[in-house]
Image (cartoon, rainbow, N blue to C red; front, side, top):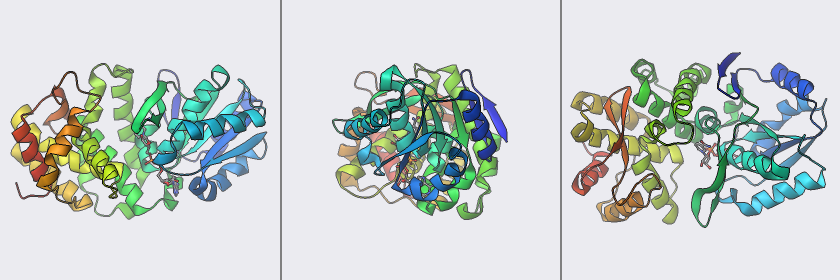
Length: 353
Ligand SMILES: NC(=O)c1ccc[n+]([C@@H]2O[C@H](COP(=O)([O-])OP(=O)(O)OC[C@H]3O[C@@H](n4cnc5c(N)ncnc54)[C@H](O)[C@@H]3O)[C@@H](O)[C@H]2O)c1
């Protein structure tokens, strides 16, 4: 078992069973509300229930997917908490991906003015990213994560065994955040990542630990996203625009797939705007292309994508805000670029440049 100690809580990485049992025995919660979706109920709940059967728990199942991360689902979660007599001395155990963690944490933080919650992330994305940093929330009015709070869990329990039932596409999507963490803060970790040939055979625990340490360091330096935490946005200005555009056009693009393409574009922009060498840009692009094979971005979509980048909540004023790379392992926040350069960066995602 590996432990990462944050200011308010620990992240534990390894077999969760003994630890969960000890934690629940020590805390003596009145009730445990276990939040799952249909997939984590099937694939993850059975092993967790082996521990839970010594405690007073009930299961709340919600439908999977981002489209259910909204106030209607919260209402259903709060209703079931109330029907099961949960109170301020109860615990919510979030067993699932980022949707369950963000929404379950938000519901727990607001039910009866707040109860404890525990994160047990079951996707690679949520293990490496969504479970750290205290951001909780839901979508509202078609804007992702527009309602929410910052609040920390009691503990995060990360067990890579849960990833065995996750599809290869979801694994690849989560992997983008691991790549990003290395590119913004750890050149040595990047060199190890570059050796990966086949995502199916990776020992994820070995890659989760350094990645979580990077996220921890960045989040602790800037818990409320006033400055350095923006380093985590590398790949996300272009990535979010690609993701939103895909949603509007109902084509299928996962978050990490969009961020992977966004990292190529923003590494391209880093060459002219932050001093990234052409060699390092090529190294980044070659690896990401090998893993993700990003689709070309049609020139007819450039203006809509730039419009979406302008709407990004990270911008101050009308300028599009980027995080660039000075070199592999070192990010530079609050960058900007000319529109013609941004267009060229969109071309760079799939061209030979
Ligand atoms: N709070 C943060 O800092 C933060 C950071 C990044 C992302 N997020 C949020 O996370 C969400 C995306 O997270 P996600 O990619 O985990 O999505 P998700 O929760 O929708 O999970 C993806 C899919 O995998 C299924 N699944 C989960 N675990 C499984 C398992 N072990 N085996 C089989 N299937 C499994 C789910 O049912 C779902 O269908 C977004 O809402 C995003 O806003 C939050």
